[in-house]
Every structure is written in C-alpha cells, then in structure tokens.
Image (cartoon, rainbow, N blue to C red; front, top):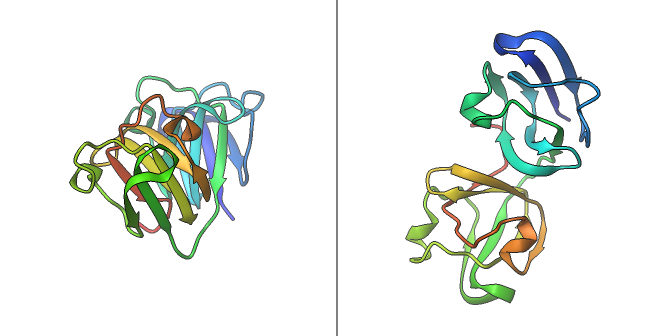
Length: 174
C-alpha cells in the first residue's frame, strides 16, 4: 500500500490532494504541483493524464519544490503506485528481439556503458520486480518505468532512441 500527497504550493502549502493508488487524471483535484510528500511506496508521476508524457520516479520522502524532480514544469497529471517486489531481475540485450550480447542484473547499475560499450540497449526482459531506466548514467535524464514483461524494441518502453545510461530497482528503502 502506498500514500502520496500532492501540494499546489512549495513547502507543502496550499491546496492538497492525497492518493493511495493509481490515478489516471489528477486535473480535477489539483491544478499544479509544487511539492510532494511520499509517505509510503514508490511512485511514477506523469506530466499528462492516462500515464503519458515525461515520467518521474519518487520514493519515500519529502520533496518541498518541484525543480529537483520535475525540472521546468509543475505539471503532474497522473500517477502510478509501483507494486512492492521481493526480488528484482532484468535481462538487457544489445540488439532488437533479444539478440546479441545479454547481461542479467539483480542490482542497480549507475553506468550501463560499463556493461555495454556502446550504451545502447535495444531490447530487454523484466523477469522480476519493477525497474526505472534512465537515459543517462548516474540516474539522470529521461526516465521510464519497466514492469515485468517483454520489451522487444526500445519503442516498447516509450523511448525514442536506444540510449540507456543507468537502471535502478523500484524500491523505497534508500
């Protein structure tokens, strides 16, 4: 079970909306989001309704202003609670349709370029747990939530290119 509270103003001020499950459209409840408190669980936030647009991963903690996690926009229009998983396992492939070199991960990886010299991942399989993929090393840049399943091409996880810099398990104990 998770709990997240969205606040319209910085510093946990102004109108607020509390949520404990996936929500495909937050617009009727909150017009903008300038701070967030995550009491439990891991969450993926989306800039547009129906889990579309840029994604932002948050775990338990207080986020008193939006710039560190949202960047230039105070728009949060949908959210998804990431289910807790006891273990995490993912297979990464250097070619589409699970071709080429394969690496299996069970822990976070701050630099996938150390594993794949090109830094390009064209397909992957999430075997256990949920993962957050980052476009750049050290958990920076565009983010993508990867839930258990097969991703035959990078378009399947919503990316416009195969560049993958780092990956992190979606867990809230950091």
